[in-house]
Amino acid sequence: MKRTLLKWSKRIGWFVLILFLSLNVLILLSGRFYLYKGVYYTYLQGETSPTIYDLNKFYNATVKAPKKSEPWKFELSKAELLNSNDLKYMDTWKTSSFLIVKNDQVIYERYWDEHHPETVSNSFSAAKTVVSMLIGIAHEEGAIKSLDEPVVKYIPEFSGKGKEKITIRHLLMMASGLDWGESGKNPLSENAESYYGSDLRGLVTRQNVERAPGKEFIYQSGNSQLLGFILEKATGKDLAQYASEKLWRPIGAESDAFWSLDKENGAEKAFCCLYSTTRDFARIGKTLANHGKWNDKQIIPAAFFDEMVKNPTMSTEEGVPNTRYGLHIWTYVSNGHPVYYCRGIKGQYIIAIPDEQLIIVRTGHKRAPDVEKDLLKKSNTKANQEKIGHPSDLFEYIRMGRSVATANH
Image (cartoon, rainbow, N blue to C red; front, side):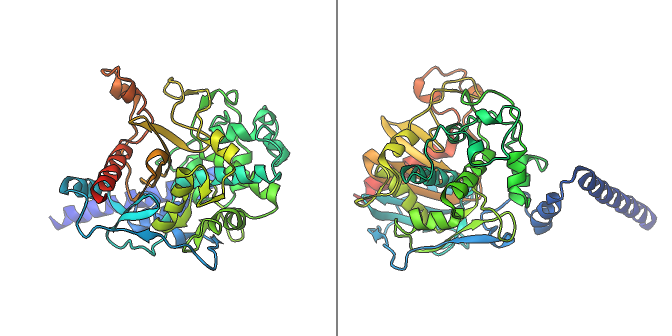
């Protein structure tokens, strides 16, 4: 028995050694050195993917809050306004925070596990909408002359093989036509390299054109990163600095936010990784719920806001007309009311329903799958067709937000 165990132990040892050596050879031959960092910060930490608490794993830049903040007003019920099934749903999808604002007052706020009101967590792709807002501001101020300017004007090395035809608008539409590989699971994808790598500029500028720009919605984080570099060139300021001056301070944020960098003194990860408290994420929701305004001050230019929330005419990957994406923002119509929202891969949501003056923020560790066309083959209802491409848990958080708002008033 002991000999058998020893024999198997040796075999396992040899297997692990061969696997380790093979992985190193693969990394060395491919030049994908970011995989070392990826493996260290995931598998060796007991994780299988990025987390919402990755702030200290990377260099970051501070998005400074104003010296005098504008705290939220609260009107909280002493009773728990989510029923047992809703709370179970929250647990199933590993929610870390859930906050609801109605008519500028926080009417529900709850945190799970180690999360609390002062905790900053990763926005993941919800940051993309912030980048769009900043593009709108830069355009209004004249730093960007037109959304239809070619990207190459601001990023000279982004040229050749048809890239000169790609405009800022194409990036905002997620219709650049680039061959960026968008995957949250494939360690060899551009997404993985953008998260763990140290040369974002090189990564995005060496992308190739795969299809004509402006025709098809294909969600790609590389588009957002290019927008970040455009903002830096146009404004002469780092993304975090510009965000602080034009957004974070004007909306009266209570806490500093932090934007992950690709290396020390490097570039902000514009496609993701804006770390904020849940309460301050809700401020983004308030500007979305009020046509770009914070109280009486126009933060996001009104004309740009109107463009941002429209659905550009283009097809989607599923072959259906685009009814879900504007200029770096997700859109949906719920019970006849427009819904604008930002979302991240782990179920980060900043949801605004302007007609109802309702804002819902949810952060967590897990997101439900998107509604897919194949699942709706047996249904011909327009409402269901419009759910294609939206995560199924989105509709639950909207329902819960409305339910709490009704119960609270």
